[in-house]
Length: 303
Image (cartoon, helix red, strand yellow):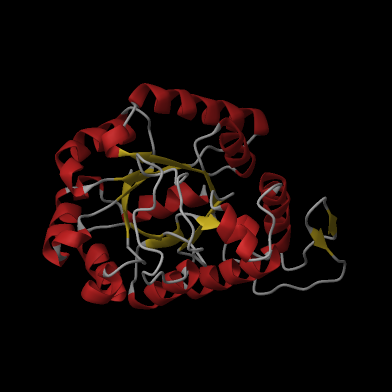
């Protein structure tokens, strides 16, 4: 059981507190995982389908700074020593999959095996289309990309001919990751198809919010994931990204207890109250540090 934290890479906080300083202080306070969210470009149109707010509207301004997640992972790897570092979650269908494979392998090697690639199919149609990828059909593209990622990490990507993704013969893609099975891969999402995809690669990142916590629904999802992993012959590895508003901090310990001890998530990613200042955020991390074991934080990803 290990504790990760969201390091904000958007809005005013990275500038006011310092993104690298937040990561260093979070690790010092006991965090065993440092995680970054992902958007590449924002389209200035009304949004009513954002899945992580109650009203479907964005919780940030499109004019806010939004630092690229893999660059954040790279920078933080250089100033930390023990914590795993990862994307939570990278929108894969709006990127070239071979480029992502190269970046992930490079991060893995340069961080000493601490990088974790969390990926999802995405929800923001205008963003994806602005980047040159159709929103319609993204789930099929995502599934094909997952196949290509695994193939790419042995250094010689296999030729691939999918409906949306094609890889030619004779490519070399080095370096290879530090572990023979490749970069640890987590598929994010709560829908039944996402859970099935996660079981296929053996890694799931569930997503929930403290103020909308539903233990029974999460139990159903976890049982589905474990069953799908067993059918696929994969070992279940499950993390939970847990959004928490400052007003919900009092409820966080009870939710964490259920996440670790009832649902058996091995790694839970929490959202410290960075908006209240560095001291408030790191104090919360330290108080939740009863789950500390950095070695276990890496082991759950590797085994």
